Length: 318
Image (cartoon, rainbow, N blue to C red; front, side, top):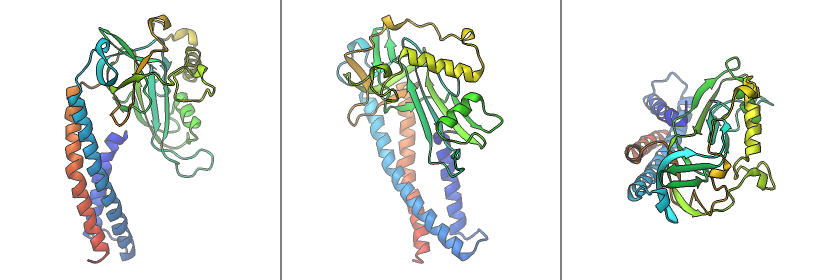
């Protein structure tokens, strides 16, 4: 279950608890009721204010998408651009959870306990890797630097996994981040695969620091893409965890390194305060979704804050 599906359910549960506490329908001691009233009132007020301002951020993104026309790659100029094409690149890696060939993946663990001391989790664990990623249309292709991008992709993997149901790949992923492999953990993974339709809203600018890990002093620098050698090693490790001989699994045939400029003059990336989004949605569908979400946040946030303030006033006996 991803945060996008979890958040509405959490809000419904919160409102239900607030109503139960406010109407004193829970059979609890007055001290506990008083504490719950204070906590729910404070949390709800802050959450309502956050939703209100977040709604205006979504509205701003919607207007920026509407005001930026789709540009053919060959005609793209330095500055804010919106391009639509297909994902391509010289080579791929293998995602750790869905085990799909991809140019980019982001894997997230939403729960779990520390594997060393059994204490509560430190927070979500996120792992992101990518190879050279390009978006291509009939006029050309552009390299995309996916760092700091907002990902609007369907989940390639979204499961709650338990000890016996975990694959070896899932176990290795959790161990890398110090999470327990014996307790239930919710994990999600988003991937950009060869040939995926890709809408990119970002800033076309001079290339700065986008290169292979092999070209950097620190191999663990996540600001660079995986070299072909590193991607091959990552693939071997994933196949080993899956129990698949390397000879039985080959990456999809691609154009090869010579078909791409791995040191381009310009790159599509994050820039300034402009939105940077990678999406498989059409612009019209994204605009429609942002309009719905912004209206819900802008109107729902103040309502939640007012209801929560009522609980605070009740706690203060005003």
